[in-house]
Length: 65
Image 1 (cartoon, one colour):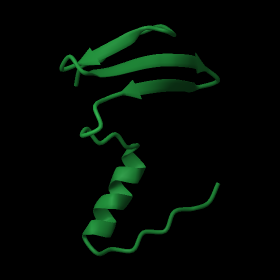
Image 2 (cartoon, helix red, strand yellow; image 1 turned 45 degrees about the vertical axis):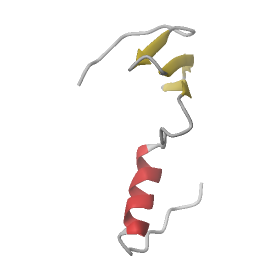
Image 3 (cartoon, one colour; image 1 turned 180 degrees about the horizontal axis):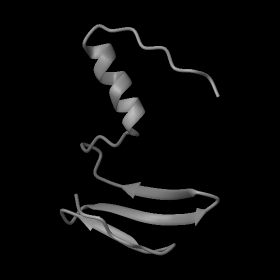
Image 4 (cartoon, one colour; image 1 turned 120 degrees about the horizontal axis):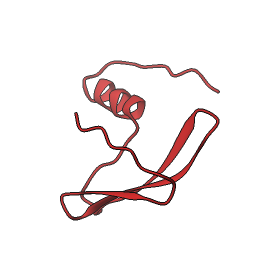
């Protein structure tokens, strides 16, 4: 795993066409903006896990917040 330090407004570029921008930091949270080509799937980990479980035929319930 590569660990980088970035400030608000700074970016990380992956493979020349995926851009991750730190949009804000504070209160124990970091907000990221992700720009990627349409064929690249971008999901939060919990959403990707739910999709994988649904594709495997499992039923997953998420708590409402």
